[in-house]
Image (cartoon, rainbow, N blue to C red):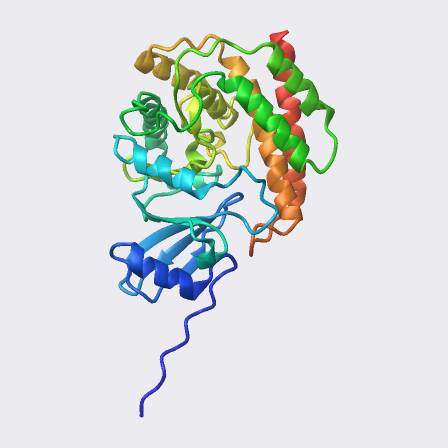
Length: 350
């Protein structure tokens, strides 16, 4: 007596199983159906799914959130282009395996990457997975990878026309001011005051590079056995611009001893990591760049992150992030805390 095979488990929201399966079989080398799709917990912007084939091969699929998406955000083709280009350099990224721009397949564009093993160190608790003696080497490799990214020849890898090269800070302040107006759920005077101060004190841009836009341990896969970055993830904010913006942003996610500045998704409060000053010195030595004005970039990064945090809060509030249950109060308070930290920083620039 034969028995029918067990039905496939239901796909999570954001995945239309049958058409996505057909597309993957046709377009992704080595993809063997049927597939299981699992939402990777922790994604607060684009939705990320682990896809496991019938033969056990694993892939990663990225798509935009479900609804309430700002027109210029979550461009899958743009993100896929960056990963494919950077993948031709020594900067570690997941292999770019396929891009689908036909919204009839899954309701929105998506792309597929190769799976890379590693740990996302996005909390002090996660830091326990990295041995204490490897925390400084991992810190040093993190800043070395950033220096290598900033050294990539943008024309040689086909990204010369990816974005405007000059006026990065001016463009960013304008962009995120607009984002604030489009996504804010309340008025925060600190956001407006910081925007004015940032426009008043714009530093001269010295050079142009690939700017990741969200570079930190929490957006990397770390090889915890060797204390090295295995792959850099989450390129959705990537553009061309001032490399010091990435360096300043890392300072927002690096514990400086101030309890109020500790971030829940930053592993460095666990201890054993290099100091931010150590990272700045290492980056300056490797790149030859002058970091004496880095405080402006830290202030800018706090402000921009406050705007991004508000956008995430708004999307959860409107149910756009799929099957994820999240306590919204910390998100709301996080926006306010970042805005105040940015305000305190820009007031020191006056």
